[in-house]
Length: 406
Image (cartoon, rainbow, N blue to C red; front, side):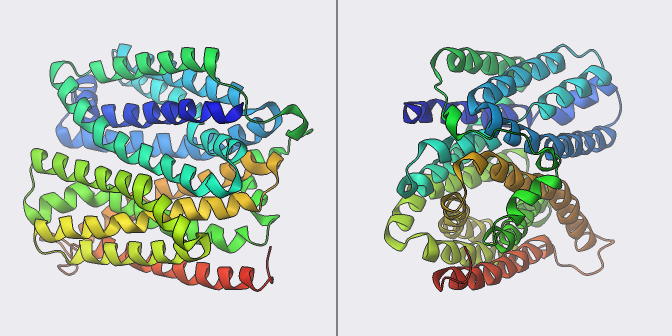
C-alpha cells in the first residue's frame, strides 16, 4: 500500500523544490522593495534570510524525523505542507520586512519534507530499489532547480509577490492531495514506542549515527561532500560573473544547465550505474568523479570548458543516493527517520557553513584586493573536501566488506 504513495511523496518534494526556486531570483529585489534600501543592503538582507532559513532548518529537521518515527510519516508531511503554505502566504502579504521574516521563519520551522520523504522512501522501497529511489530524489531536486528559477524570473517580472502566492497555492494543493490520497508508510507496530529527545536537537540527532559503527565514518564523508556542494552553489553565479563576464541571462542558463545535468545524472545515470556496479563500487566512483569535476570547474578558462565539466559532473551524482541506500540497509525500520534527520542535520549545517566559506574564498582570491588571483579557489577547496571524503569512504567500505564493521 505504501508503495502507491511514492509518486505522490516525490511530487510533494518537487513542489517544495520548485517553490524555493520560484522565489530565488526575485527575493533580493523583493527585499529591496520592502526595505527601501540600496541593492547592496538588500543583498545583505538576502544573506541573512538564507542563513536564518538554513539555521532554523538545522535545528528543527531532526525533531521532525524523530516525531515521524513515533507518529508516522503522513502527519509530519501534512504539517510541513501546511507550514509552507502559511509561511509563503505571510510573505506574499508582507507590507514590510517584519512579516517577510516571520513568513520565512514559519516555513523554515515546519520544513520537514526532505527528511520525511527520505524516510518514507526507505519504508516503502525494497532494499534492492532504494538506490534507484533515492536517485529519483536527486532528479527531483535537479529538475526543480531548472524549472523553479526560470518560472520565478518570469512571474516575478509581472509582480514580485506573485512567486510567493504561487508557492502558497501549490503547497495548499499538495496538502489537499496528500490529505486525501497519501497512505502511511510506517505501520504502527514498526514505530518507536518512546521519543528520544536527545536526537531531536541538531547535534543530539547525531547520536543516531553514533549507534551504528558504519555511519560514523560515512557521516564524515557526507559532511565533506555536502560542504563542497554548498560552497559550489553559493559561488556559482558570482564566479561566472567575475571570470566569464556572465550577465543575468547567462547565469540563468548556466544554472538551468547545472540543474539539468544533476537531474539527468540522478534520474538516469544513478540507476544504471548502481545496478551494474553495486553500491560498494558506485560510491567511490561517484566521489572521485565529483572531486574531478570540481577541480575542472576551477580550472575552466572558457564557458565551454565549464559546460564540459558539467557533463562529467553528472556521473558524480551517483555517490549520494548510493550512500543513502547503503546506510538505509543497515538501519532498523523504526530508526530510519532519526537517521535521515541526522543526515539532514549534517546537510543543513553545511548549508550555513558552505556559503560563508565559499564566498569568503572567492572574495579573498579574486578582484583588486585579492591575496592572490585564483578565482577557482572555492572549487579547489571543494575538490579537496570530496577527496578526503573519498579516502574515508574507501577505507570504510573495505572494512565493511571484510566484516570488520556493521
